[in-house]
Image (cartoon, rainbow, N blue to C red; front, side, top):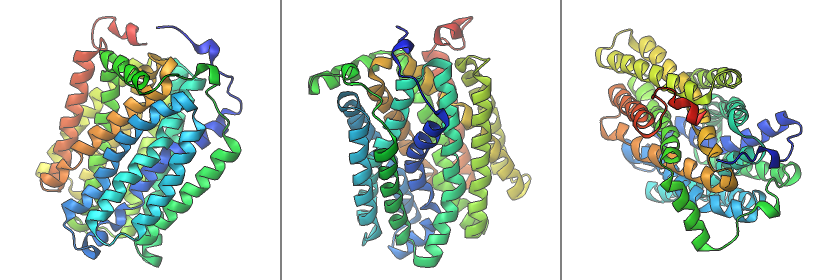
Length: 409
């Protein structure tokens, strides 16, 4: 694996980049989380079942997966800015259309498109990080991005509740359209192109498929790409199930539910910052290995609490906070290691990682509703996803073999 760090442009004012790229990466998450407190009302207003309403959240992840697979190669061929600006523009259009959706079927279809187009934000953020940083430094920057991304679950439900209370749930999508316009202006004014013309991929469709074929054949890359997806499935299982578990099951108000999201978002932010500090001294693969193991053990405890009711609501929330907090140590390390294997096609590699992440989460998270939509169903889905992540790391990479972690450091 060649070390191309010498070819990376020098990053000036890294804090500005962290905030800007973090805001881009947070837009898809904000689009999901701002809508959550209104989910029961949306189901009632549009005459839909709770499980079908949850699909309007999960389907956005499927759209995001397809979008990243399409937009990633475009960003390697045409640079980061142009596909990103088009994605933001179409995110604004679909957000406006969502505000006028007459029924749940149309809303689900529009959310699929919304996920497809704002996938450009995640692809651009990860690819720009790889354009400028490698290895442990990339893991550190990705962890810093989590500080900004973590603001989404902390603030989005509060904003969503306030907007819905003042003007109705449809205006939530109006706010998202305005957010897309604001990010477009920021990118246009402040974000230069980070992929020089001489480093861009050439060729047509055949070249795109050749790039994907190369990535898919790299078994360790694919394993490391799947792990963030299974981690995202853990997070999204909480996201799609929590409005019904805590608002309908435990009677939490919109404000209390928003506070719950904020507290859990704080856990993600704190663990991401711990990870950013640790990667200076500890190899990312070691942190990933330890975090998954601890997270799996805590998930067993969450399931036990959900099954027995021990500790009531407080006990459930405490175990849930711990499971989610360790999530801050998983995707940054796995993604940084995976990206370091294919720096010459960072956009396509970022697209595969993002597509797998969104696709796996989009397929797995609806199982919470299928299995009953209660705390037990959520805990089971989380635990199985984590067991699968540990198995992938153990059997598809040398992470758990004697001195094998050195190969991935």
